[in-house]
Image 1 (cartoon, rainbow, N blue to C red):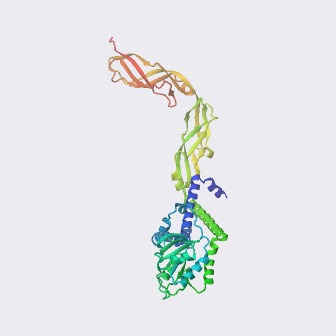
Image 2 (cartoon, one colour; image 1 turned 90 degrees about the vertical axis):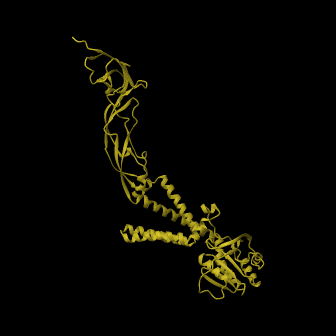
Image 3 (cartoon, rainbow, N blue to C red; image 1 turned 120 degrees about the vertical axis):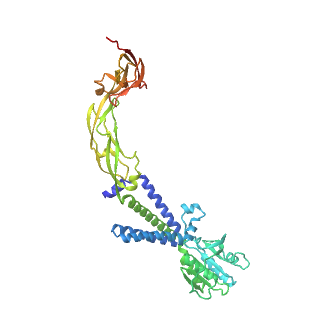
Amino acid sequence: MDAFLNIISGLRWQDTLDILFNSYVLFRLYVLFRGTNVIRVLLVICLLWVIQKIALGMGLIITSWAMQGIITVAALVIIIVFRNEISGVLQTKNLKSFLWGIPRYQLQTPVSIIVDGAYELTRKKLGALIVLPMKQGLKSSVQGGIPWQGTLSREMLVSIFWHDNPVHDGAAIIQGDRITDVSVLLPLSKRQDLPSYFGTRHRAAMGLVEQTDAMVLVVSEETGRISLFMENRVYDINDSHVLTELLDDQLSDKSTPRGIRHQTVELAVAAMICLFSVTGLWLSFSRGVETLATREVPIEFMNLEQKMEIIRSSSNTVKLVISGASPLIQAIGQDQVKVKLDISKAIPGPNAMGIQRENILLPPGIQLKQFEPSEVEVTVDATVLKQLTVQPTWTGHLKQGLTIVSAKAIPETVMVKGGSMDLAEITTLFTEPISLDHITQSGRISTGFALAKSNLKLQNHGKNSVTIHYEIKQRSTP
């Protein structure tokens, strides 16, 4: 339970978005490829991946290595062997159906019209190929075709396959109560065990059912016999009632409320499996291997009174040892790890401040292992202004016989801001060193100030330099 709560507490909004997005992508792939051979091979690859992870966890190095190689080869097989099916899905004309549309089961198909039409074609000695798609798409298996979108009727079927009609060669595709395409070319079966009386239409029908889950109704032009191809089997139809029962058995439930509920349940289960799978994959990557890292983080002193300032601190940084998944550790920015210390209760002088885990802020998914120091000494003082006399700092030596008669600083005094304790014993502010080695006559020189302590600040209206006017004379000889 604690481990679960630790995972939930460390879940970032980026992780939630990552899981949901990839779950949706996986779900869309299932929706687009369901019923195809591609989805079956993908399921096998997923099973191999689970076996590889189990083998790796058990220390079966060779098995894990072999599974990893098989998975790599299988991924290439999908691209090469099933390129036509993949191409058929990727070439979807409707962007909506590709991104978020849910393909529905075939709408209510008027089986009686198909049966009547087939027997009318038989009586007129007209050959016909009638395709009834199921769940699996046909785009990757068929070629050519002319969009028709005509309402299904016995007369329409007879007119399509009439000898003088330019589109009578090829197959007609029926979806619901409409004939969607005509003059469609089907793949020919290469099986050698088919009956000798099978013509091109029969071999085309068998070729399609070998690659898809569609049903194909064939009316022989020579014999007038009706055959139904489905699930790699051939049914010779001798009675209209038999044909009606076969078609009803395959088509009727797909358009009833029961069939719709079945589809809804199927897609809901698939969505949950996708979500759990991606979540497990995320946990495998983000929680699988713990990585330790060290960070040197500056301390942020908070809530210091307005008239107080920090004079010194025994340490300005805290060394942290943190752990987490390698991608999370690498993604940590400089502003995501902070150490904040409340010094609102500090009094003038040294203050011992303890650092607790509550003072250390880490991004979700990162754990704190240890830190040092656990205490810092912070010296604070009240801020005051003090006027100090400017005193030049001379270095080196004048040439022999010369002496400094006078030296005057402009400005003579400056205001300095700092802690009261630091300024208590300071009455003079010295300039930066001025060398005497090259001075031979009276003049002036500009230089800066040498602040005794780094926390002292000049309040000189932006002027950080001072001009020293000096007078040089020759020493009188006795």
